[in-house]
Image (tube, rainbow, N blue to C red):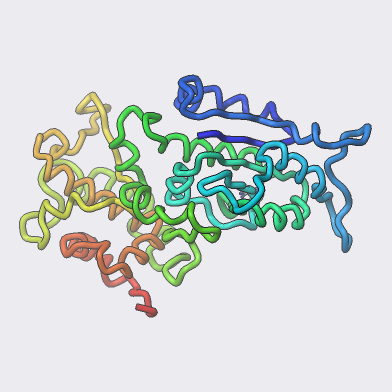
Length: 339
Ligand code: ADE
């Protein structure tokens, strides 16, 4: 994959030479080209911005500078747009959410071009014109405002890069991630092919937002996963053996759930023990325990994801429902009224 980054701060991207992503670049799996936007500014001060029409604070980046940059980085090809071809990604707090599904979809693009805006953003006409010749996504990494797109690009490049074949040492690692599993491979399949790139996990549906499970409720902080609850210590999780579904559905995709706690040696550390089931060698029981832990952590930290899963007929097994209900949670789940 080729990744072009256009910025007024090329030195910001030194970290791309480090760690997993740096190794992938050294192997040639990712080819980074970082460009200084000011090389396309023609006046003596190499100006890239100007005052906003309509007044207001701050400065707006000029369309002409950006257009010339894009034309050099991805020269226009006469005729129909090349598919698959370059894709322009503009980080902005006003964009669509960057999600695991979107990261996975971008791994199928041969060339990603990131346009790092600063100040109040880039003249909208540049983005409109770019859309006439390649897919363009305006993407936000979260509901907060950064000083520019550079830090957001580092975040996105790392999330995308680690999903490229051969970048993670162990392919399972990505599958078992929070938000991983099918979200990375299936649901996202169409995202890079469509200009709207609709994510299944965008945060604006009726299942998002805060609710009775959020904040400082019984599952937050030091809840049932933290030592004394049904998932800790020895023995199977609450109700194991009596619940429908059993171990088989423990292999279900973790898509849409947060990853639960993890442990390594020593088995006892400062008096704290690793849950026995993880030492049992019983792979089905371990998978089931991990799924239960994921459900509980998700309910505690991201109840919006549990509501979304509850509204998806295939997402939660009978056993999952019973785990949630054993924790007193099933009554709190609001089914999506639209379904
Ligand atoms: N630029 C400034 N804030 C941003 C955000 N939250 N996401 C992406 N780009 C940004």
